[in-house]
Structures are given as structure tokens and as C-alpha cells.
Length: 340
Ligand code: NDP
Ligand code: MG
Ligand code: MG
Image (tube, rainbow, N blue to C red; front, side, top):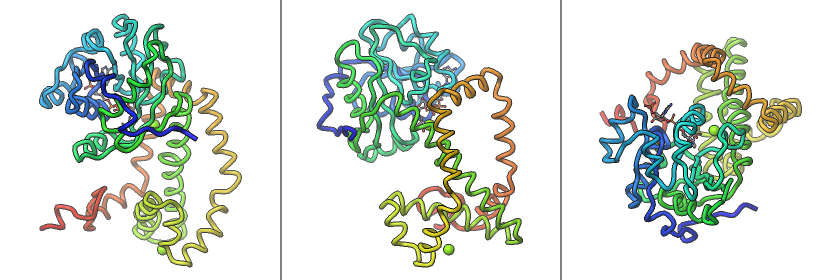
């Protein structure tokens, strides 16, 4: 059983008189920086001189400096640049990190796979909102929370966990609940989840099913609706009330068909391959591959991205989304077109 922490478990005095350097002003960075600022915490955003995010951070009323200057001034350094550039940014700011300071992450990859070796004397913590940054910001503004994870990798001050909880409260995560985990568990489950289910597994399932219908002579539009579009309705039901609510909502025919055929499609062989995917995450094979891919200038990644974009399901989807009222909206059914 993991511990879960809420607002009452956090003590803001651990962060109230501190300065937080938020390095990066992208998805997570802009949300953490603005939420901290609105919570009354002193924030300084660290961006390179040439950064395209500088104007946005300044327009949002935040102080902006270089990563080195920001880290030098801060008590807590929140590492919110992309994971692939974090090792370089860390090397640049390493000399600014002093005893008693905190290096904070929103994902454990670089610590867990030793791409960043934090100096002694520095606390190393993680507050990882389980949501894209724009929702972390939007929820905060709506007085709602975003669930998050908390982990402590290095506690030199004896206050690492209390301070991380206070940070989680200041960005709104303890309003929803913060689950305690470790850098290892967060990193490995995050990578496995996005590979096996969320990003890899689901898209592969959708494409294979789409191709099965189209190759059997059915129309591309019908295949798109059945195999991709309707997925949202099913996922929404699972999100609201688990698998049970979904089974309750679909027809008996769909339920019987799903219960008898689902395990044939995603069978024990698939399960065995999932274990291979997990092995590669656990033994570092995936991490080494991804680091090397980046060092080589992303040759395979670039090719794979292009191939995915040119899949037939993308072309048919673009046409259909422009013809129908939901018009590509991702949330809710009301679009501006609806109101006209
Ligand atoms: P983004 O890709 O959105 O970060 C972009 C920001 O980083 C920009 O401000 C960019 O500015 C800056 N940046 C990029 N390269 C450099 C560089 N070389 N030096 C200095 N600044 C640079 O990152 P995310 O918010 O997606 O990810 C940040 C962390 O949060 C990661 O650890 C990620 O795993 C984690 N996370 C992300 C989630 C998400 O939904 N995105 C969810 C939970 C965790 P510039 O204009 O200079 O390029
Ligand atoms: Mg991830
Ligand atoms: Mg049906």
C-alpha cells in the first residue's frame, strides 16, 4: 500500500521563504512556475538566452534569468527542461548547487539511469504531476487539484520529504492527492505504461484493427469510427468507473463478444512480449537505446515519426474530423462551430 498525502499533510513553511528556480518554461515548467508564484512562493525561471519561451515567461509576470543564474539564486532547482537535455543543463548548473539545496524532478529517468549524478549534500526529490502541464495549470486556477507522485532519492537535510510535500501543495497536487513512490518505481512504471499501453500498445491495436477491416473490404471511414473514434467513449467510461462501468454501459452483445474475444487478441504471447518490454526497461536496454538515439541525432526516431504520420488512418481521420461536428475537439462536445 502506497501512502497518499493531501493538503493537510503538507506544511507550507518548508517552502514559503524559499526561492524556486524553474528550469524550462514548457508543458510542466509554465504550470509549476505560475502555480508556485500564485501560491506566494518566490520563483525565478531559468532559460537560455536564445530561448523562445522567454517572452511567455516574462509576459506571465515572472522573473527570468539563465539556468546558471537561476540555480545560483535558488534554494530549490526544479528541473523541467526535456529529459534528453537535462544532463547538459545539469552539467552547466552543477557548480551552483550547494549543500542544503534541492534538486527536484518531475520524472525519474535521468537519476534512475545515472545520466545525472547529483552532488553530495544536495537533496534530490520528485514531484511528478500525473498530467500534462496545461491541466496542472488549469486545475489550479479552477481551485482543483492534479494527482501527483512524490519520491525522495537523496535526503541530506532530513527535510527532503516535507519540502517536496510543500512544493506539491503549492502547485496544487495535494488538493487531489499525492502518492509516495520511488525514483525507480516511477521511472519503470512510467516507461512501461507508455510503451505497452498508453502510447505504444493502444496505437498498435488501433492500427492493426483498422488495417484488418480495410483489408477485408470495409470502408476506411467505418474502420476509423469503429477502431479509433469510439475508443474515447470507452476510455471515458473506464476512467469514470473502471472496467465495470464500461461493461455495464455497453450492450450485452458487446460485453459477451468482448469477454470471449478480447483475450484471444491480446493473448499470452502478447503478455510474454510485454514482459520483454518490461525487462528492457528494468535492465536499462531501452534507456541506453534512447540515449544513443539522441546522441546520433535521432535518425530512427525521425523515420518512425514520418512513417506514423503517413499511415492511412491519419488521412482518413483528418477528413472525417473536418466533416463532423466534434471537429477535433478533445474535451466536451461543444465546439465553436456548434454555437454558430
Ligand atoms: P518541455 O519539452 O515542454 O520543455 C520545454 C522547455 O524546456 C522550454 O522552455 C524550452 O525552452 C526548454 N529547453 C529545451 N531545451 C533546453 C536547453 N537545452 N536548455 C535550456 N532550456 C531548454 O518539457 P516537459 O514539460 O514536457 O518535461 C519536463 C519534465 O517534466 C520532464 O522530466 C518530463 O518527463 C516531465 N513530465 C512531463 C509531463 C508532460 O505532460 N509533458 C508530465 C509529467 C512529467 P527553449 O525555448 O529554450 O527551447
Ligand atoms: Mg512518460
Ligand atoms: Mg458497436
